[in-house]
Length: 423
Ligand code: ADE
Image 1 (tube, rainbow, N blue to C red):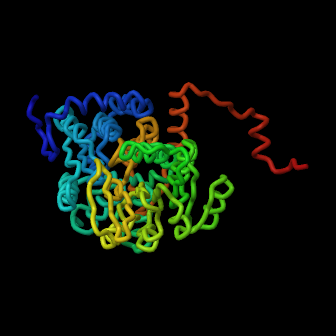
Image 2 (cartoon, helix red, strand yellow; image 1 turned 60 degrees about the vertical axis):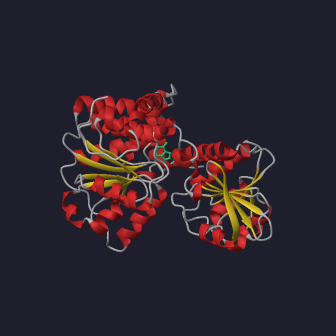
Image 3 (tube, helix red, strand yellow; image 1 turned 45 degrees about the vertical axis):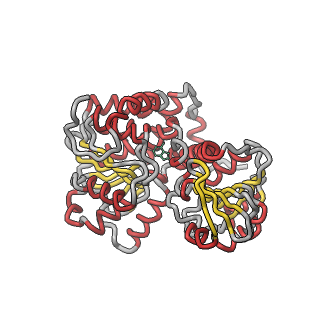
């Protein structure tokens, strides 16, 4: 193995050969990124651009990083979650592609932020974030870097919510494109990606049979819908808890039972939080749960299950298998917490499948190109993804799936544009 010429902090460079093969395997399911990568390679639209990315370090992210690098960008990567890094992928990016990566699976909080600082030391002109930790650290601790930053992108719902709050308070210092809000992102990644990978993570961690279980899904946003849909598909009875009336109504009319968590707590076998909010399941709910209930989170941060409260209530705990900790309560009941309440799909499985990340990361790559090609800076605000990028990603994905669709006839177009003809 040749010695890497870049700065890095990864677990073990000797893991690189496995990482390389797995990156190649993911690439087979990422035809849209492949097309963009090929065009970037020829056109070099990102020549010399310094890009700092804080994303889950997975095979799919590796394919995005390689596309950006082929476009001429200098890419640095750090983890957006302490438990999601695939160490072999991190090693392969460093040793085979000379991409500086700062990410070690299981890193503590201090190391997590040290790695974010290492990515910032690259003096980014464009930031890619998943959860807004990079952007918030840049704004709080490295403000002298702000003048160099043209714009950033944000991958996830939680990050967009944080960034909109920064914009509302006048704290946001550079423009961000909310990739999460593109149709080709949240309708697919959040729904089908989170849906499948959450079930995958819980299954790998526990090997439970879903058929016949009562599964409580907290939150009926796009992620919650996906999780509920897939759990039901496996034969579970799904209960949804919500705080928004319209979403609760949708869940009810999608054929699911809807009730407050205080009721659901008594009947659930498996609880999955996907709300983006804190302490959604807490002491008063743990007190009601059945012996053997399984607790998992698939929201961005590990705040949805009140783990401190669970620790307080427990008289003992033990690690039963990877990603499963048994908490023994005073009355003898046992509750099983998965993956320390962190994103179960990335902690216990491999995150969303490549085919769906193909679309999210195509949006990311095209947004970075959009930022790079602009002659004027975007206004400081949280922006939506340009509609033509969203449409292009959908078109390319359809083409890769060999699906063709109809076009409006001239007559139909005229009809849609007119208002005169009615009943
Ligand atoms: N977020 C969810 N799944 C992911 C994946 N496979 N790669 C990167 N980010 C993700």
